[in-house]
Image (cartoon, rainbow, N blue to C red; front, side, top):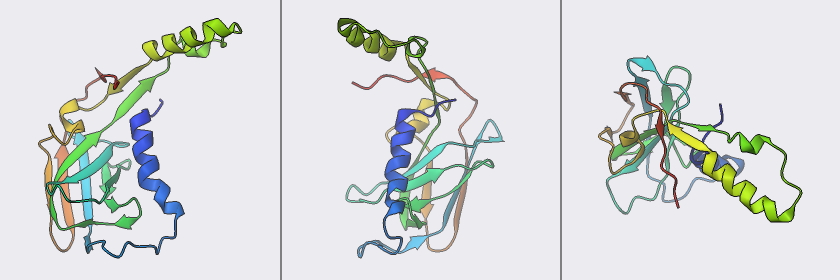
Length: 172
């Protein structure tokens, strides 16, 4: 199973900052409160799902999220390294994708320079990426999942319905 490019990009953004000094907390970072989200699919734990929180405040600038563990739970982090989230109301976006490699991509690259461009174009056309969760949960505009973070410990459980395998729309 190959992780989707989008999920990998999100993880790189969230966790690349952990290479920085862990004590390098931004001066304007608000107080954070513990947040644990559990995601189920059709009543069963959903491991390996990306969970992101989006503030309803358009001026909010912090990145919040994480990946679910084998039990479907995730401790939300701000900027990928500070446990918790600021107080407020958030839309919850949950994504899990699967990318299938193109069968053409397993063949040797053509030696003729004129054929290389067409070869890679065919690979891009044949690659398929699938949402394994109802796509409505994959966008802050369409998700109906919400959480309000208050002082103290916050826990919330969501069920994203039956498993699906929907071809993702290509961007661009």
